[in-house]
Length: 264
Image 1 (cartoon, rainbow, N blue to C red):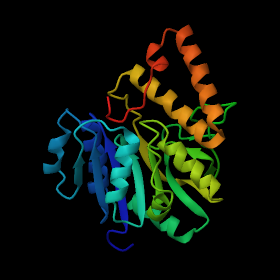
Image 2 (image 1 turned 90 degrees about the vertical axis):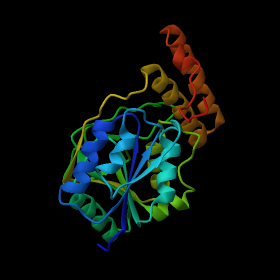
Image 3 (image 1 turned 30 degrees about the horizontal axis):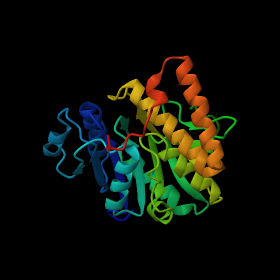
């Protein structure tokens, strides 16, 4: 493909070693001429020093953790490519594999997003009021696996599609950006495919943030999704139910949970 037609956006927070491995795979395993952007969400573990090891990577450093969604939007706005691969910092994929994903998208106007096959669960149903938190599962099928919703660990989307949707709704903090992208793709009557011939490694590393903080953010994100796509009442009912469950199980972080967006 033409140089700089592909951008890779990685959001990272306090996982310097995983980020190092991810960048090494992109830059040294059959490297390609891609724009690589790292949006660092206020890391304090030495990730800021990685620019000396990867001089061709652009680092965008935020003063604090603005949440995954806001950081993704910052990276998308800085992306120059026609195709953008949104990645977690614990995913390893070679440059040639990234090129192959974009080449596939370029030939398939009926497909809005494409993913490599991960070694971790990556498909789910979209949340509904009856099933607000569908679990991630391992995909199965042939060479091209159709998915309704995928994890945000590694998903390539046309940059124009993301910009036409007004970027990603920032009512989501850490949780919700991937399901929002997938929901918008479904409403556009185009597909999401996982290409089993293109593999990537996903460590699914433990988050450096506390479990309580993540649970609170997830409850807020789920309520935001349901309220947006199924009406205000659906979001409110989910919040009430999740609050009652939190009280019953003494998970008070969920009860008073707020999204991760740097405002705290």
